[in-house]
Length: 136
Image 1 (cartoon, rainbow, N blue to C red):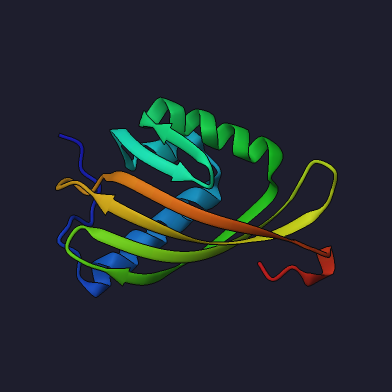
Image 2: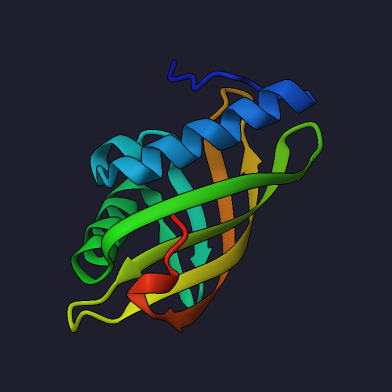
């Protein structure tokens, strides 16, 4: 049976660990590795896109990082309950034309008993920035 520690129910400490693990994984920009943290039938809403399952997650992330270059992410725990975590985050990237952006967002996560994320709902806003205004 697949498990991803820490497992729910979350404490403040284990929720913080889960957030840091997610941040580290996404900063690796390795879609295959990242997809393993989700259930095989995980449901996502990312902006206006809906993604279901690991295969679609890999496809989504591969496409994301073909367009979002020099990606760097920072996540922050916002709230948690037994098997749910809410995070706020920001990330920076440049597009293929060289324009830099800072994206701000919130995610709501729901985990199964084995610590795999079964639902991820993300809202994101992009702000064009000058390269000299980068923080990450």
